[in-house]
Length: 80
Image (cartoon, rainbow, N blue to C red):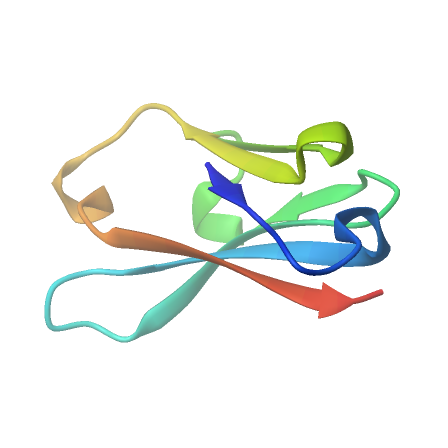
């Protein structure tokens, strides 16, 4: 999960990315200010993104993991 501070969390879209060792940054999932979510084609059916505006927090859950899913995960925000 990731938590924001210093800004009005529910005014921002949340983006999740990952970076495998030696790899480039890859988009994983997105959740809008209205909690509309979308995942990258490679993650369809394997990713669930949520947000809790009362806690200024977003969570990403993944399942059916394989070796290629080993990565560092990051969140970012953009003003909706």
